[in-house]
Length: 297
View 1 (cartoon, rainbow, N blue to C red):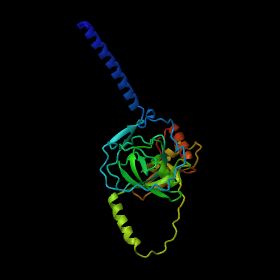
View 2 (view 1 turned 90 degrees about the vertical axis):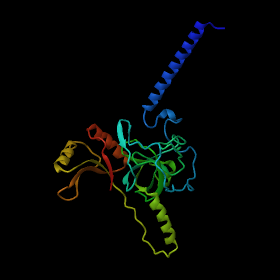
View 3 (view 1 turned 180 degrees about the vertical axis):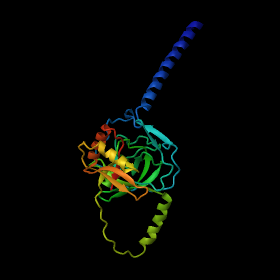
View 4 (view 1 turned 180 degrees about the horizontal axis):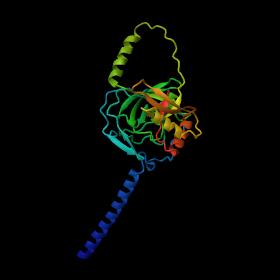
């Protein structure tokens, strides 16, 4: 039998060990939380990749828009990643934007998305920085005209110049796997309107069809917009800052709108590809011009 003093010493030692373990766990948690949105310690792979074996994606169907409540997770009024604050849109209604798409694959497969759902790279899903979760959207490749419908249930991509991060399956269907990126248009879908449209299509399908001319896909041009000003003199000053810089495209000032409220936009382009836009973005950052806007015309 232990004496009273020995029992006290044993309890004290036990409490001390618990305190050390708690402090260590808390430190590890804070370190993990401070490392960014997608902490690499969560994943078995250091770098992302496509599946290691070829996969038949011909049977993967588009996401079907349906009315859903907003996710309990992933919809804060705003959030911070890598020192930059993002504001979540209250609604996806009317959202339509052109930009650069990237994709993510095996590294994140099976892991929890920002909405709480597991990421499945073989389904039609995507990540977006500001659209409410979930949002259904049609994504169209501006170079080849292909389109898919995805369910946006994750946050990202937190890479300069990127608009949307597609699942492996969605990227494959759009034909952007090989290059890794593509120029796309993202248009949010109202599930109620979509359901009504599907009904209209069924009615139309029962009626005789008239021949339609083949659709043509005009190749898009990629620019970086450095600023937009109400006074041309401000646009001229920004242009002058880069007068001695070797740029990969023409630096121009364009005017939009008529008096008395015209907008003068400073743009560089057209640019050869996404890699050129990324290199230019880094060059501009060295010149003190940060976060230029991707423009696709």
